[in-house]
Image (tube, rainbow, N blue to C red; front, side, top):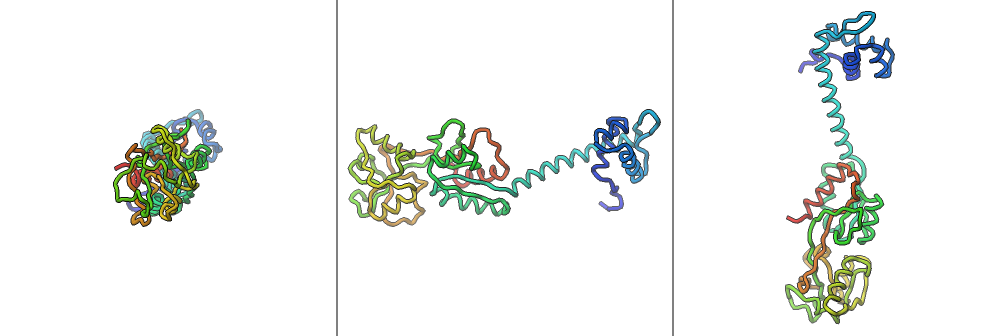
Length: 304
């Protein structure tokens, strides 16, 4: 469009004309717009001068809109409405492009999945700062519940009231056996009962995984021998590879291949699994940036 045919009229002037048409009074319109009557009169006269037409017929008692004024007001209302929608959309884009996202999760997820999610996220939103908090399930729950984290990734099986979980994937449980151990026979699966007298490198007692495994053993009438307890699940494969003992871990906590020093057959008697989920505080508002990151996590890690 040629600049010569675009009238030099500002949005505030459009609003002034629309408001005067609505109220039919300079006094009422000026009061609504929080301006003076002389200032409003000058604005209307300027718009009429730019357009070259009279928008309002004035007399001592009232203001009447002219046919040209009615046509212009209809256009002005559409322009103002489109402008409001555009500004609202730009605000959403701005909130998505800037700000901070805090994610709370366990170390293996932070190491194996989150880096790729962050890489993709920052490709389109480089100004958003991402904070990553690593901890065990109680830490993740505390972070999300307190609002420190926008969302968490952890086990859905043990969520308290007030937190919502959206399932990402069911992770099967594997048994990590040192390659020098008598049970290491390139087997695809193993029964829990075979481990009853073996020294284990285990997760903390209060963790969901430990309770899951101990519960399965108790249901079969025996107790497991927890020889070494570590704080982080990612520590277990290193101890197993060194020959300290046998470990039991979900598939998502296994090191990326190639792996040396141990075998990881599936635990099939009984078959155990954990539900890994996106964890959020119930009814919490999520920023567009946080929602985008959660969608990336679902895309990268969710069930196919």
